[in-house]
Image (cartoon, rainbow, N blue to C red; front, side, top):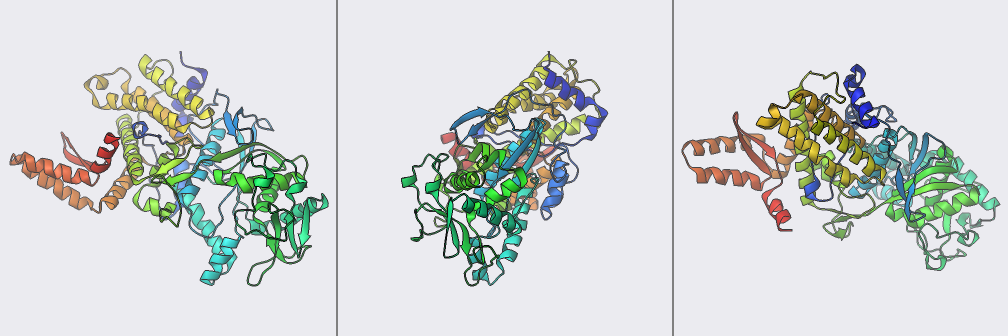
Length: 577
């Protein structure tokens, strides 16, 4: 028998309303090459990458807040468990207000293009955002922009540009990057420069509580006034050092004290305050903006692992000083990104922006790669892994494209228990594994692995003699494709069009190979002539030449076609390891 959630899913999919709805894009990525699988979603023509927000909205079919999340979803029967950095263990998630979730994720400092470390943070919390919506929660997702900071001022001075203008431009660039990666826009994206009054008010409260002091128009938080300081990071107070972004100031009472307000310096933007003209410190901004939009107590506060100390540790101290009832239920942090087994760093010249990566790889391939490792584990970025992710995505989308083409405009009416037992069992297993894995602290690699069986069923039904004779073949294909869609949508991997994303993946493969399609077709014709002349050795040479560049030739009844694949040297390296 089908589970209640599966029955609801199938009934919705088979309804007229379900057929008109469209799924949102989602991402799937395995930890090892063996777990990569490819699926392609049903969509209308995908907009050009030059207009990423239009691309996102068309692909997702969602509003600005992502409210129209997905087709065929049913409320998860699994209870969500998330790892809490504060308690150092997984805990059952229970929102403060039933049915509603408040989530704040620390945003970027906008002085340059965003890198793949940023991509990991915001893909991680986009998946959480989507899954909470899948579970029928109403989510208020706040992600800020730090548009005033020492780095922004330094970069603006180097370029002779106004700091706010430079920062605003990079805010726009960041939003474009997020749209390419199919990250849904948050509910609110506050900027520091627009919340100076709230920041000043919070600093006043901290001073009134005796937890801060003023020195030469600078305001510092006194960590000695907060006995619980270090609880999140596990650091002892004597081991702590000053904030990452500033040098130690000998005027401070304790080297770990951090700035709440910085007095104005020549050539810097400033705002008037009770302590004189100046600007906010780094840490106070998130405390003030999260309180403004979510209150002093809310459900989830997230960011990269590098923010645990000092940023989030300092946030806790100043928020509790301003409001004694301040409390965050879950602190969540994703792991670091390494490049070729080394820490990503500009000094090591292994620093990649999102734009640099998506020049050669489809944005969904980057997203797929990021989800192939559990979000709390470190992830190792390599060209080989991106090639593998691209190859798997092509397989997924090609399988779903073929499935869609076969089903065509047929819309089976009854998909409940009438499906063959093995198909129904496969769908049940996918639904169960998806919900259980996602509810177990967003275990996306296991979800990716769970796609193997339904994809095999699809290809067997499409291409094998036995599958083509299967009873209720079209109905089975329809049901399998729709359930895979739901999984992909929750992961942010659903494109707007299977055919369009396949075309884009081919173009990226040609770009990486420094080839044109006309060159590939010329090689196919040369190979055909060699085969006709029984020059099989030359025929094999041409196949190998193209395979070395990541171009696979496929012979079929209708002739020879090509598709992207993992370049031979990378395939051989994977096999050897």
